Length: 345
Image (cartoon, rainbow, N blue to C red):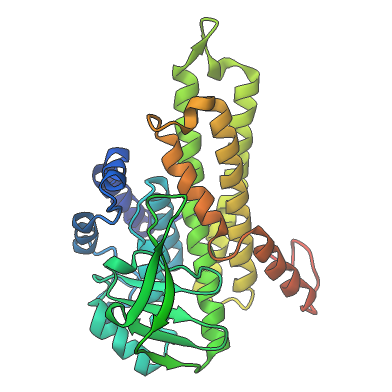
């Protein structure tokens, strides 16, 4: 079996990587923080013009119809750049859910978000505080047994302080007017939870890789006793441990993406496993990167804290470690199939 990525999948990845290298530098993120405007509308419009926002919509709806694996490759690059705009965890999520939503809600979203160019926020019990509501046209909100769509102008909300200044969070107080439904709730709720976990996992893998790369460069540049600190065994082992964690986590991302693509009945299990593994990799990357940098790694002058802040925030989004373990455990114990590497994954 050929596990290589297709030329088209890699083309999508490289296009996003090149764009973000130019448009989403650490300096631009800092500028957004300083202005208290982390959502950069100019960058958002450029991403839309590139066709990224609608890329996972079907061609008949104005998209490229790209598959879940290519989407995962693109999202990893967004994590690597610490992109503040919630392309993955909001727009890609909405696009993926569109075929599943009832016509009443689907119609309202289509009238509002203009093939992905307008931001639609998503809130769910696993991620209850929507992102950038001040910049959003509407909100898709999941409750315990139903879901609803409302225009931002019909929502009363207050801002929340986040550990990551790139994430502008809100708390919903009330919704004056909305379109709601409970049609096929279990199916749609499961779909959004699995996709939210996977997309967050992709971002975490990108962040972990970025922290490892920053730490490796710093270890080669910083000297002690006349030698680069990267030549010392303790530093080598710390960074090698992160690299190993990433290498074990990354395949679970692509397996989960392929599982969704193939409508595998175990896709919820695979997405939970992917989020769990990527969060563990990001957690170790944060810990070992700050140790490799020393205390100065978390100072404003260093870029490392930009990526650490986002990683810490995302670890809790769409189900923390305990929640993903719970999903995995319940899925395995409710199955009558044999367990083990030949059957489970």
